[in-house]
Length: 287
Image (cartoon, rainbow, N blue to C red; front, top):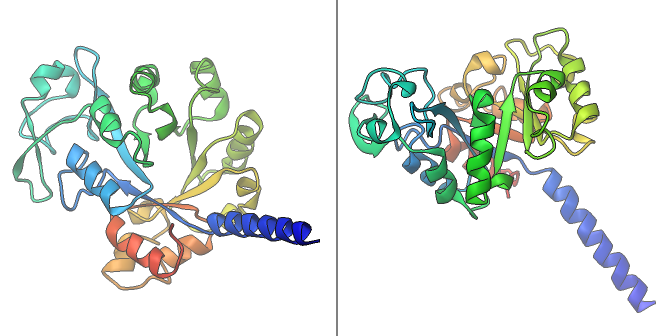
């Protein structure tokens, strides 16, 4: 009897722990902690990891000699003291330039490579979301395999499942993947269900300018499969106006972060990682 009671108690603890984990919200730092370091810099990713985020988001570009570097824009003009597109330069040449901070001042931070970022975060438990990467999946995959960090990277795109499968049939079953789904489009639910039939995505990134989609009030058909729901709190155009500025500058959490949480988000990507982490921890919604 005592053994049976102990077993039941242990099972209850496991179930409670699983339920508690499901209630936690993961935080993604958009381009790292760019308020305290240049966006998409190695330092910005390290700062974000140190503060306890679950995921950092970054953007990939290819140099003239085929190396993968971190850069959001088509050109390096805005974020560095250089000019042109990454493909104009070899890795050695592009490494000469320095990133600008949020005030537009040149810092001593070079443009990092994907390899450098993955090695810096290796073993940290922080995942890396590979944005603007669809055209360089094979190159990114090779770097992740080389560095032993394949399980830390999340590939993403706005492509439907059949397009992904057609272009990268050899990678579909080997990568952690997240579709980006525009809920403003009439085929949004079909895009999601096609992915759920074809693979098990890590999450679905839901973007929307209007917050009227039925998927926002009924997305358990996603989470019951084990996939997560990712909603952005940056940029009002991605979340129907339920954004970081509303939360921070207007001090209106109800119509911003709380709204996103109440509409099923299990991952929130933010430009205010420190403040969002503090808010979620206060509500016991972060690990």
